[in-house]
Amino acid sequence: MATGIVLGINANLVKVKFKGAVRQNEIAYLQCLDGDLKIATRLKSEVIRIKMDIAEVQVFEDTKGLKPNDPVEFTGELLSVELGPGLLGQVFDGLQNPLELLAKETGFFTPRGFELPKLEKTKKWCYQPTSKLGDKLTAGEALGKVKENAFDHLIMIPFALKAHWEIAWLAEAGDYDLTEVVAKIKNSEGMTKDLTLVTSWPVKWPIAAFKERLKPNTPLTTQIRLVDSLFPICKGGTYAIPGPFGAGKTVLQQLTSRFAQVDIVIIAACGERANEVVETIKEFPKLIDPQTGKSLMERTIIICNTSSMPVAARESSVYTAVTLAEYYRQMGLDVLLLADSTSRWAQALRERSGRLEEIPGEEAFPAYLESVIASFYERAGLVELKNGKQGSVTIGGTVSPAGGNFEEPVTKATLKVVGAFHALSRERSDARKFPAIHPLESWTKYQGQLSKKQRDQAIGLLFRSSEIEQMMKVVGEEGTTLEDFWIYLKGELFDQIFVQQNAFDPVDTASPEVRQKYLFDLLTKVIACDFRVKDKEAARKIIQQIRQSLIDFNAIPWEEDQKISEQAEKIKGLLYKKEEAP
Ligand code: ADP
Ligand code: MG
Image (cartoon, rainbow, N blue to C red; front, side, top):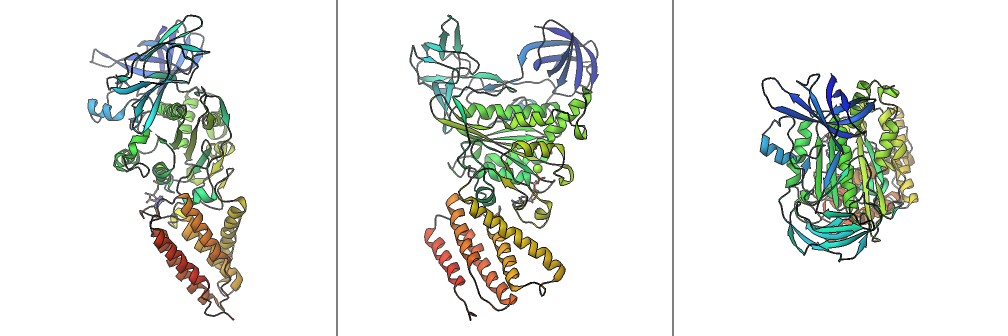
């Protein structure tokens, strides 16, 4: 392996003069001989640029105390994650250090250079071979499985291996830990490999050991009405949630992670404030998975890099998260990756690019920002695996543009690549209209359960209603026709009952797809009704009554079908009680 010495230090960017061969993105350890302590602290870093015999590395930790001439060891290995059973339920940092264990070992302040095994090595897993001697398999095909919480965690031929590998030896079914060999494989050239339950993969390379990519076509139900019915997303698709500070990005991501109908959720908390992240980590294990009745953590992985952790590790947290997502996709599972916030990640890129003195693009972001963002979202996708099953990675990223201005580079670059756009608005969050996704600024390319016509009609009503509202601010209610006033009232009603959803009401917080359709159809009847009242006061009164009945409707548990249909009948009854019909 190559070795070197520190030449110069610019915050997290360090120049190293090396001897031997060094490659882009390989990991190097800087030996920081700190003050009186005679022991060196090993600081982990990644090679980001090589010129002749000088490598520039970004250090994942504070470089305080590092001096010129301090020794450097290169590892020859790319920044990688360990993939195997035991990932679910963990909270990792961007370098896959298990944070809970780290806290137990080192207390509140983790000393620099402290690394723990990424996955627990000695825990036993109940392994069952699913292949037999002589089977010829290729990368990504399963040879065995272990039970990890509710899932069959497949043990696969390592993703980087080319051509066919024959099973030369198989361990019997039984309990094995991550250090024990469970299979031996050989290829036609006589090469052999020992396989354990764990494998590793460089985070910046997509895992692509599948048959083919498919076009996302199945809606991913989040149980958020505004999303599923009006701006749907698909399994294997991508979407962005831009919004100013405090507009509800994090709350929306958390609701999605609880209620979205997927197998596994991976949360990449990237560069957000530490207290928010701590809250997430504390809250999550307490939450019950509505699908299984067990702790939500059993199907969740959190990757967390707060704003107080070194900036360099933010970038790796996003890649670590997407690599874990791809790994579970290879098992035929539907994975949802939520990245909060991609702006903080882009800021880390900007900082690094500045130190590298690269030619800056718009707002000092690197000129390659767009391609970096695009290649991240491209790792989402619905795929057909070699066994004919399907798996998906859906990516939803929040963007936090300064001042809520969507005309900035990160939002613009994201807009170009995602399939749906859920724009959070300050105006709506200030009015406490949650989720504060603005129905007139959002869009989607995916098809959900409602037809395009139904969606266009609903959004058209909201649009007209908001136009009339603006006009009324100028001309007053008296200056508005009764006809327009009705459109305004009906638009408001649709907004309050369907678009807004109460995250604090145990029933309304999650709305199953069938329920959304039922409510949509009910509201369509209300909107289509010609009430034939003679003045605005009477119109307001009728809508008020209907609104209250609909709010009550939204609070009735869906399982109580008797009550649901009674309440729906009551609402329909109000439609034809034309007290003042001519
Ligand atoms: P951001 O991540 O965009 O900065 P947050 O998600 O932290 O914003 O939301 C800020 C605050 O707005 C929350 O603390 C909460 O009070 C309120 N809020 C956001 N979303 C909702 C919601 N769906 N229902 C109720 N309140 C919400
Ligand atoms: Mg937030």
